[in-house]
Amino acid sequence: MNNDFGKLSFNFLINKKQIFSVVSLYIFSFGTTMLGFGVYLNLEALGIVEKNIVSWSGQGLLWGIVTICISLFFLFIPIEFFRNFSLINRSFNDLLTNIITVLAVSIFFLLFTQLIISNENLILREYQLISRSVSFSGLITIPLLLFVLHNITKNINLLSKYSYSLVLFVWILSIQIFL
Image (cartoon, rainbow, N blue to C red; front, side, top):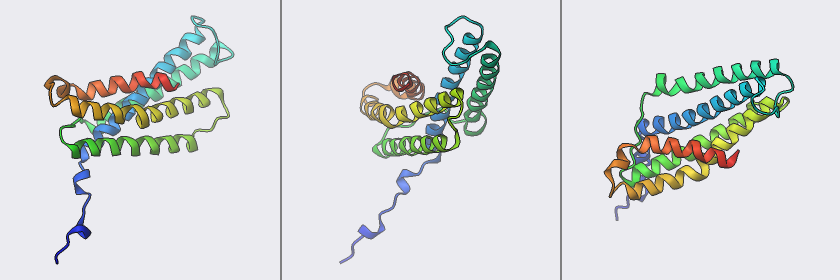
């Protein structure tokens, strides 16, 4: 009796292009949220919005410029290193790979940022909140969206062409729910 159950392999789950695509989605959504926070800090420093985070305008301008520079650094990482802006979600293996990668990346960055960033400062506490909301969005919203896209794109080819942009857009919008 020849039994092949002991030879189960998870090679079907490993596709580097898909993994890099999901990681770049995470980094793009994190960088975009940080860029928005940096703009908000500058608006607070200029007195356009009510001051809630900073106590004086010099502090707001400094943290705003630092936050914008950090966000630009994060936004250039996927462009320079990954260079893969397509999300393949045609087969069940692709769907499984994408969902597992989104969950793993979200959990990793959630734990990493919660351990690395201290909450001594109000601005650093906001950085933690942003990273937590991006990770929770990746844990809850994006796997559901990937599943829906997997089932819908069989009928609508236009969605498969723009699935990367759609997932990025929904990820950024769903971050606002968890902030």
